[in-house]
Amino acid sequence: MSDIKIKIIDREGVLHEVDAPTDMNMNLMEVVRSYELAPEGTIGICGGMAMCASCQCYIKSDHQLPEKSDDEDAMLAEAFFVKDNSRLGCQIHITEDLDGLEVELAPEEA
Amino acid sequence: MIKTDILIIGAGPTGLFAVFEAGLLQLKCHLIDALPQAGGQCSEIYPKKPIYDIPGFPEVLAGDLVDNLMEQIKPFQPGFTLGERAETIEKLEDGSFIVTTNKGTKHHAPVVAIAGGLGSFEPRKPLLENLEKFEDNGVAYMIKEPEIYRGKKVLIAGGGDSALDWSIFLADVAEEVTLVHRRNEFRGALDSVEKVQHLKNEGKINLITPAEVVALKGENHLEKVTVKNTSTSEETDVEVDDFIPLFGLSPKLGPIADWGLEIEKNAIKVDNTYDYQTNIPGIYAIGDVNTYPGKLKLILCGFHEATLMCQSAYQKIFPDKKYVMKYTTVGGVTGFDGSKKEAPKAVVKAID
Image (cartoon, rainbow over the protein chains, first blue to last red):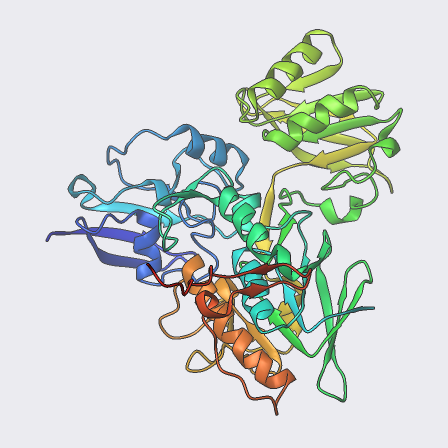
């Protein structure tokens, strides 16, 4: 059982430093939901299938992240508020390599 | 006026299974759904994705689950109002309800079960400053009558199947079709991508990629859209009559949020200790649309909630009738269509 530290800036601009487990098959979107850093129903709407962009976040630290899958890439091509450092939280698996990761949640789509 | 026993709002897996449980109690159901087909998210978002936690199905495709549910409820002859969104609800003096859709279709029932999932699916709108000004004035989010684009200059934005399919279709109808997408790659069916390539080569579709629409211009009606090339940042104005952004659908709780129901975390609060009734007697909420302590948004939980809701609905509709739950193995399934399914009877016969 090992936890890593992740810094998450929520949609209100508030910084949270949270412990994320690496042994629970969790992704970043689920970590955000587990700490209720964004209201239910505004994040992870599709359940983590890269089929909505409600978990879009901006990666602020220079961690090496896994390559985007075609699904994630295509979704980000249609999402709003997309920046160069945009990723879908649901596609980022929590591993020990991500200790110290810093992300910011993208605004909610109206 | 459509009359039924239980009016179900939302034809996803939970709503569909409620028809079965209601049918066992001889209650008739009618379903309303904003989408043109039954199945909810399972049909609309992920029909080809496997689900592994439906009890008794080690693996089932979401689309197949819907097909199976439709087959299971067939004997109970549910009615459907599809492609219409439940808009308003009115409680009559006798405690029954009238639910009216956005197209004016009225439904009357003593019990309403909201199985609305994440809400109704609405088109995702691009973030453009004066977008609302041009809505129905040159901007549309779905194509209802392709004929109105005959002889017009149309610009479609998007990179999915609907953007590709409508570009192909309108290439023969409109005077000019421009397709704008943020990437060079499209994620539609291979066949559609190839067709667009072909029409582009023939000069029938004007393809602009990687680009996005950044501004709308016009006095009263839309006249021009500004398209920005996302790699060079160069902006060009394209003269158009119509702009159709096709960025898919996103779910919104919608008008249900204004029905006086207690809402928490974008979901409807229900009594999970008993029957999943809301704060308004006679209105239930089942499946992903509801919330209570420990709620899990799982199809299998929706099935359970639908079952308990139907028992409570029965007591509400027939307060004086005595009833105990019967196993289908014992009682079989008697459809409203006259069909009867039951376990084969054991034979009593002596063996010589």
